[in-house]
Image 1 (cartoon, rainbow over the protein chains, first blue to last red):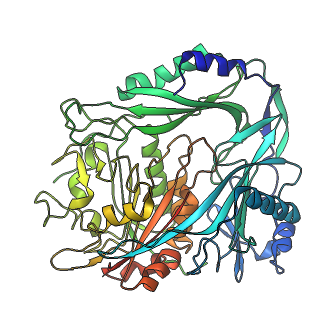
Image 2 (image 1 turned 90 degrees about the vertical axis):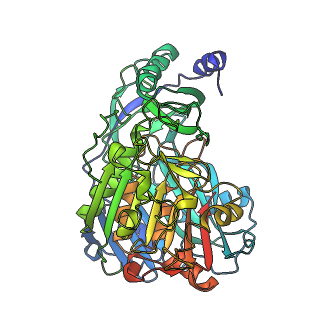
Image 3 (image 1 turned 45 degrees about the vertical axis):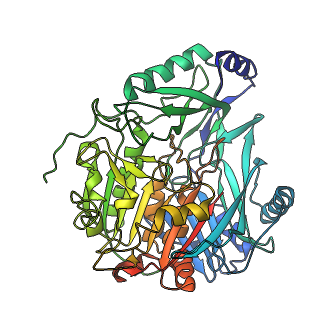
Length: 294
Length: 249
């Protein structure tokens, strides 16, 4: 938990020079994808081979499947025989450093970084286990690594479901798949004219969360970064935001609740620039009235 | 890309806090409605058949509990009356899904569920604490009973339960429901679709999605976990002698 003094100190560390950028929405979804997936092993890749279905373009060349998400131009390429699949015996004990080195090397070979900069963020592990009814479970095994490389701009990391490359590595550290969500920027819409202060942001939290849920919250962490949304979402501006982790507890009735409710972590995201574009959070909506019959 | 299989689905969410006087206490979570509705909208656009879309006052704990365990339970005609159900809201750790509606109670206890004995093949619980760490032991402790069948279908259950380990982590990234719907509709294995859609790519905390599959043998449970798709819609209650799980941490 960050108290007020810690928050004030944190705020003093914010203030890099940054901009509000326009996303280049004129780029064709498959613009640079074909060459990328050819490099990854899909020799028959051709723009005409991609089938459009709702928000996706997809092309399959067994065992590979390439998916392009139209709203973001994100690309995912997987080996369907191996991606997120347990071979029944694998148990990886690869350390984070080795995983990151392998992921960066593979992503570089594939040209996934383009003209953007990425930095290692997290190594995740896909684990499996099984159990027979009434018996203790098997020990868990690690069957793949998902290395998240986060986009960097103006010295800031990206936050959100986008703004990253994820390399999936199998037991031999050979990729089982990858994805890239990094919207192309066309230029600066305007420079950040100033940063929103702590009091302003705390006031927003109180306004948003205070009367709405009636419980208490604590601030667990705050990060300043550029926001990029996930692969199915439209986004035409990339701007710096404060990503604030809150721990919610209480609310409603429940003073005598026999099953104490888990506190719940949520993330509140708000424009960091004085001239930022918002709001960004889903606004509370009126609760549904009872209309259903027994 | 597999052939398209149309399924019947239902969605429920709880985005508000309980009214005063309710036994349960939990905070409102506005993002859960967006997650759930996005799932439902995308499923409809993909050509699936919507059976129900119940939020807040219309989302009831009794929809999930089996009448043989709790007489007020209505699962056989509610969640177990469709192939695929997505619930977004609060969870009490290893205990229950929480409901502000307080209709025959504010919690649907996992121990009172007997899932998949009728029509339900896949249940997604987009909430906190359905599984905790360490995962293998928690899966057995929490999910053996809800997948153990009822008197008419002993040791039978659904194909899969999808959930989170420890905290679910809502924010402005509310697309995971839609992302999941797109993926399963395209023939992606259900467990793989959930792990890919719900895995958080940023943040100081992370969503740790977990998929738990049932099977009559170890190989069957593992196969269903990694390869099972909506094409298993008519598999009927499946043997739950084995549970095979996968999760990302």
